[in-house]
Length: 234
Image (cartoon, rainbow, N blue to C red):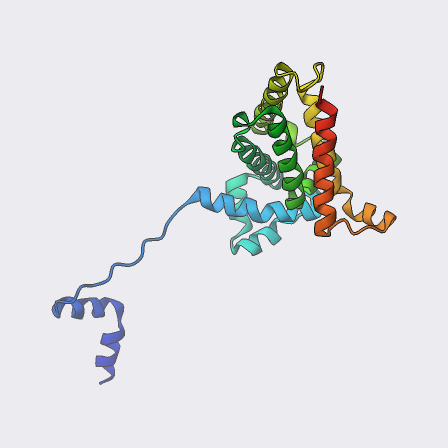
């Protein structure tokens, strides 16, 4: 009796019995190997780790534990902690540039296009504090690792081109004043948006403000859009 029970539960013998009875044997689910997805998941977890603790404080074993994988696997994909950090920077910049490219600014009037671009920048940076902290951390390193990435340097070219195209259309239409540099305009938009996140805690404490209330957020957004538009208008 014991032998009969054992043979019924043995996988190999169970398959033989199933064949003998004419039953279809379910095929085992194949294990998928998707390196790109694995790398993307690691980068997502690492983004938060690096943004919270910086390059020096971030720990690969924490990332590995969160991913339910091994440190060896992370090193296999990225080579080193610094290599992973560079890929995190590239992913962060790629995401914002990709969304910017989908704004379809060319379909709007110059003024509306500029307002949309500024409002997007304000909203994106506020809604993605990890990105802001990554940029702040990289500035502590004086751009050392960003300089190693040709990907990020190439990504920023379309960003300036987009701002320049909107500005040039506005000058041609007589609604924007001439003489401004697209890079300078991009810097001004970034500065006004970046400060709202980078200095939110200290500014709120010093001036006893609730900078996170819906009313304050909406008002600040409208103010930044208005300031940039007034700056460029003819």
